Image (cartoon, rainbow, N blue to C red):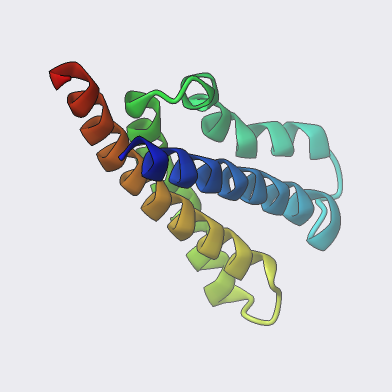
Amino acid sequence: MQEKANRIYHISLALYAGLVLSLLAETWWFTPPDNHVWIISLLQLLPLFLPLYGLLKRGIRAASWLCFILCFYFTSGVLDAWLRPEQPHGWFITGFSVSLFITSIMFIRWQAQANREMANA
């Protein structure tokens, strides 16, 4: 079970990086604001960076908090894709947030099972 948790953990980290890069690409290249780009980027990424330390330590609680936080990014991506369907960044943000949510849930489940197996052994 630990091997499955390890694999999905690495996939989750890759999707996390993809979501961060998509948000940065939206702010800096696709639809850059007139001013205060740094502040807008910080406001976009700050909630996503809150559970990062726990995620890097493979914390189950951090992964569950990430799932709650991803709801906001999913909503933002869906609204962006709905309002401007011809631009790809809304679709990317939606896809990355859904994929990251699913892989985080799978990591939580498999890591918890692996922890129980190690405790019982």
